[in-house]
Length: 235
Length: 398
Image 1 (cartoon, rainbow over the protein chains, first blue to last red):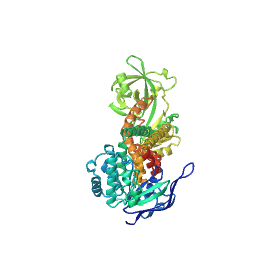
Image 2 (image 1 turned 90 degrees about the vertical axis):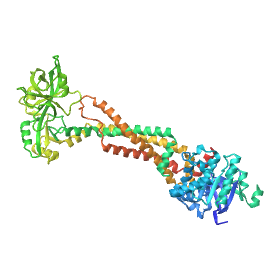
Image 3 (image 1 turned 90 degrees about the horizontal axis):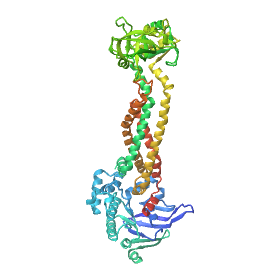
Image 4 (image 1 turned 120 degrees about the vertical axis):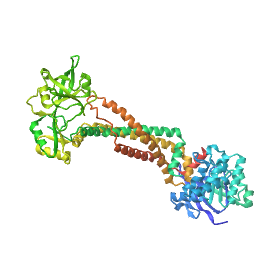
């Protein structure tokens, strides 16, 4: 394993509510090494998605220290966090969230253009990624013309567009049937095998069974952190 | 993908709403454009009319244009002014009413001018001669309407009875011979107008022996200009009031035309407020519907500034497209409105209420640009403050 891409120490995340703050993440310690492949499981409302959003620098912790790619999230301005996400972090969402007015090609090309990648390189990378997810032949279709599985594969290609070190996926198979979900999981396996750190929040046992490391969360804390055989047995 | 392209694609995605927005801006922009044309239309039109008459200074007895008593001592005043090096020509003018007799014997009322023309005359000859004695009878120039109404042509004899002051009904009719047909610059569309010499006007109106004129038209000499001529006349006759065309228009602008300016300001403001509300509502609805997309873009690493710029570009595209369409629409509308206003009585046919000026286009575009920016502020604020994680959570659930 290489140097940690995520280091969380005593991280707490609380949301202010009229009736008082709701603590979503409680005093959490976590280290994710570069190249790891892990699943975060747990019941609804246990703080999985909040943790994922913090790992993706979308939210900052209320207290504690969270370092992503060597940088303290709390010290970064909004623009710096955006730049870090653009260059280093890829997001895959349960409901794909592709831009419906753009083609599959344009959806994948968009983050590269935003990152300032030259046109020729963007073209090459987009073609490469759409082939990678098996959708080279659907590149000029818009999201409404794609099936759920195809849309999620385009979303994965989009997340990989700027060669992120960390790929975060929030219930990526939640909207898919089992067979399609398996294809998506296979794709995550490949992404991980190609060297990207993959963190998947899931209820899907098929995903959790394939990740070498599984965190089980309850009430904002990590209840178990199992690796290797222990992770498999723990399920 | 540039912000403009991205904004355009976002707009095209909702073609119906975008088309309605563009049409709304085009309608509002057309009204705004018309109000801008109206705000200065009369001023520009009157200035053009005054300049086209060939005289650039007007001399009156008071500082209220065309409202005071007559200028007296006209003959020596005209002679003295004609000697001024700054002055090329002076034409004293009297105007009043007269009645001619139609073929059916009934009276036809007309406006009668008396003028002592020199090198220049305040009308444009279309047919025949100017004010030179014609076949031994006093000359009369008529406008086309009068010529048509009484079937007059150069050489035709005509009798006029002056009605220039109280008791004029007892004046005897004077016999004239039409020497020419002319266009009078200040005629309204249906005006019946005639002009004769100052002497014959006085005789017709029973004003013999009164050396008066309503006003003196002065042409400044080339190389001196109207300002120098005005200065020289003021020095010569401090009791009279000389105005250059520019000063005259400025006075009208302060007094008579300020209503149009005020109305156009109020209506321009109202149309701009409508435009602002329209675009704000459209963009706000659009942003509300695109929360998931916006949060996704932010999660993917798009900077807040970039997303805000997208909203601004959408606003600019809506307002820009509508604004461009509003120009021909506004011009067509102004032609229609101008025709309605010019049909009012006592409005010179050559005066327009709506006059196109490049300046109006520049102001129109500037105001619409400002509206686009202001209208985008609230939706931009919504986008800038959108909580990424909370939005993604709620959009995933819904």
